[in-house]
Image (cartoon, rainbow, N blue to C red; front, side):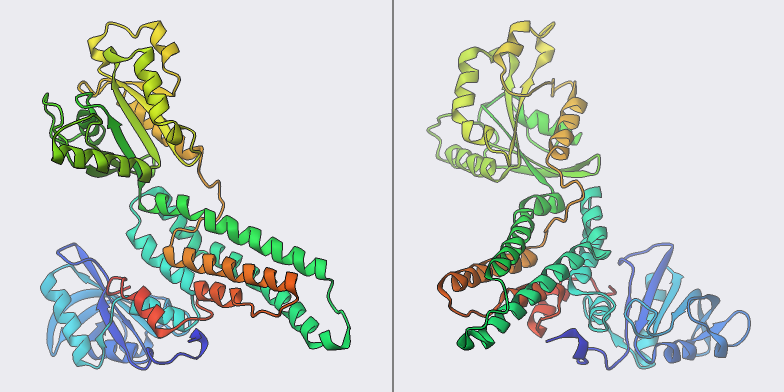
Amino acid sequence: MNNSNSTTYIADTICAIATAAGRGAIAVLRLSGNQSLCILKQIFEKRRGNNAHIKSHQLYLGTLFDNEKELDEVLVSYFKSPHSYTGEEVVEISCHGSEFIQQRILELLIEKGARMAKPGEFTLRAFLNGKIDLLQAEAVADLIASQSKTAHTMAIDQMRGGFSNKIKELRKQLLHLASLIELELDFSEENVEFADRSQMTTLLETIKIELFKLKTSFRLGNVLKKGIPVAIIGKPNVGKSTLLNSILNEEKALVSEIPGTTRDAIEDTIVIEGYSFRFIDTAGLRHSDNTIENMGIERTYEKIKQANIILYVCDISDVNSESMEQVLNEFKTYIRNNDKTFLLVANKIDRLEEIPAHLKEILELETVFVSAKRHENIHLLAETLVNAVKNKNFNGDILVNNSRHFEAISQALSALGQVEKGFENNIPTDLMALYHLGAITGEVTSDEILNSIFSKFCIGK
């Protein structure tokens, strides 16, 4: 379904409470549809002048009436079509935050001819009316859900159309490629060559490179959006749980002198300098005869695979060349992995008067010296974590952070692979990549996809 000819959703006027549920100083209700202003005038009276002169993009102070009784003093704004969020006639009512007032206004709007909006229906109408594309619509939901500076930045960039423009440019190049292929096919039997085959191959390769960059950016984009997973690992009783509590500044994990206390992963999230870190305290790594503890250790190795940052915690008093060589050998796969950051956290420095010079020679990995128990140098660990992310950050590049977009880009790349094979074997192929890229922005879509996307929105947005 193309959004340019869709009228299924826009025949009536919808209303909803746009602010979060609960009591607050004010609340906002929204109306969208052809009857929005008409419905408002049935229950609203301006403080000055009459309702006949309500102009677009102005605020009006006045009273809402429940039949003939005053219900609330409100501020009303009106946005004339097409200069509104949805592209339709839109009214917003700012009332006092009483739950009774909010619900009664909603009832009055419905009594006067509106209906309750479905989740995401205001943004859906904005998409159907061509105010935003599907990428920008999904960015609205991401913006509302953003819990960190990086998630917010990605959502804002996507709303401004940076990603959309990139996809549109790639589709434009694909359309040019498709026209060259079509031209060659039309005249292939007459032995007339209208397109330089090397030019077509070069264009195809250029598009593939750009799509591959977008595809590979998904790992970082998804992590920055949902929180950077940080696995806290090490042997039993080195202070992993104490370290987690110290970082979070709360007693999240149970701390005990008994080895093997932590048998399942404990997770919590904290934002540091705009980056969301998802810390995972894991079971201590050792050989055990306890079945339950061994299950926890197996899960630890799973969390290590999933983590972007690994904090290997050790008791500084137990550090020696042999123990460090064992760490280097056991985790060399992760230490050498460019997608992961492996940091050594030398804990319990409170037990030493000073850090021996020879220790720094033994510790070949980047090391932070802390006392989790006394909260010493936790700020240095936080700085190290932030720097690790900044070193791998996107530097303004477009990041894919939505699994639907990732899947569409992957399918487009696969389709281009088929085109490339067709070139090599002189076999004509359909340019399905155009369809897959169009599905990202909504130039080609279906009711099923739209329902899946917008059903996840909150009501009122």
